[in-house]
Image (cartoon, rainbow, N blue to C red; front, side, top):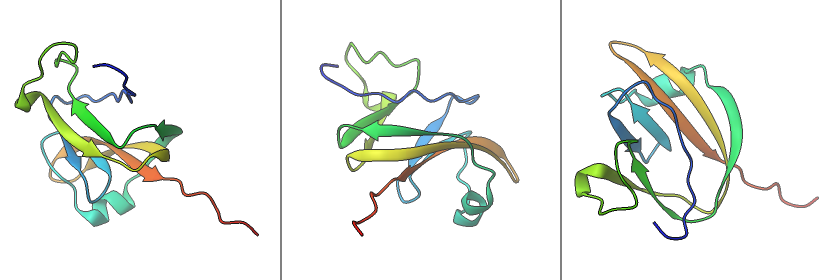
Length: 110
């Protein structure tokens, strides 16, 4: 895929979607409400630096070296910079794995 940057996420589910308004990768065939996302127990935090603005959300079955088909990916747009990445299982009527990206904005000078 040429010069690229990647963030590899683990999920126990095969179906993935990008919830652009929440900056959440949803795995498990359903979308939680904004309130469920807010109340989730977010764990395993780490900081990741987005070097580019355009990414592709792929499943592990997609072959990024060969021709990608439209069903193989979802485009994801991010601002360049550091993001706090966190994981949560959310259980409601359904269960799913979710990964949230929160952009870290540098504090302005004193």
